[in-house]
Amino acid sequence: MDQAKKVTLYRPGPGRDLTDVAFDVQIGDIAYECSYDFDNAGNSVTVGVNVLFVAQRGPAAEQNRIEVPYFVAVTNSNRHILAKKLFTLEMVFEGNAVRAQTVEELAQTIPFPVGVNGAAYKTFIGLQLTPKQLEDLRRERGG
Image (cartoon, rainbow, N blue to C red; front, top):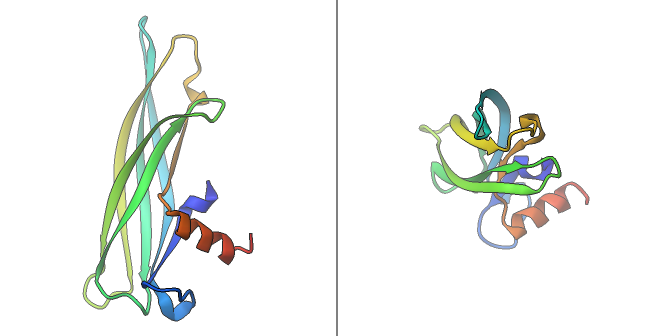
């Protein structure tokens, strides 16, 4: 899921050099906190997450704010996605600032059957990329 940690947003058109960059957005630090609840009917884990998003405004930026879609997905031990939810992050660049950052605070309760280890469930967070953005990212990385 490393591909979903960074996205470059370009101005409309075919250009993809440095002068065409409107914004670079990436996920910085992610802090998790888990609390477990056990009873006879089943178990659950509540995951609290703080996600740092960092953005830079490029030379092609025409506004001081952007909206960036991102996702939170929960998988089981086989990495099958059990749930995925999309969110929209709005980032504002104050004045002439070229850098902005914000922390999103999320909480999710994940139920799991009695006898199953809650640590087998994983939470993934990433930027929701379009097929074109994924293609651009793969080209940048030479893959």
